[in-house]
Image: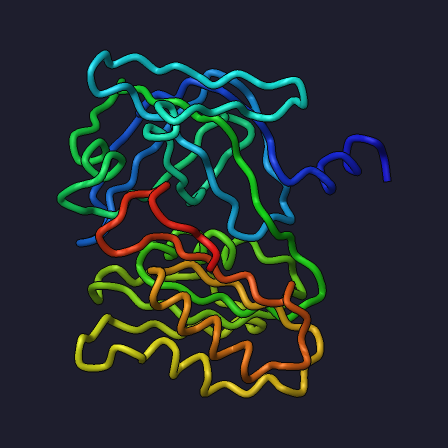
Length: 268
């Protein structure tokens, strides 16, 4: 393996600090606005990353300025409390390394820094990109993807970029039927969509638990969803698949009802 490929394989984060410019804004479903961006810097991603995400930096609401963080003595991003209030994490929906253009799907809410920005966004508007990263990469593990509406972009991106022989299950709960996404046919993938139903609050957990993968010693459970749902599904799969190591359960609270990002822990 040459040095460049080895570096790409091992790197789980790229610090970018680039200025993004809006090229197109489109409401693609009842729950999502898709924004296409160009970047003033060239960068790449690791093709083996599972569910890569971006750290987006929004303009100061009072001044309209975008102030990028600096790196500390250990070459790590130094973010103070003021700057942290302007940073949000979003999944990569699609990325073109040749043109340095990519798409981000913003969930539509009445409040929230990023959601409000996306609903007002127009061609030529700008935000910042601090970094692009992932905590996991593809291996020979059987991949089980789970999520609510907030994880749709991450799961769809991952299913569209699976290595040829990668096997996967996906369980996705959306707000509306029109939020469902057409995905490539793949004999190694089984996808289950659900529309959120208040009368069946545990349908996602029940669906995941109904599949028996106990005979498989190489499993990786990845999930992104609201905090209470994340806690329920994490406990359920851990109780069922007791033969797996703790690293096999990568389930994150993408959001928490009534809280902004930074006001709750993503893993608890």
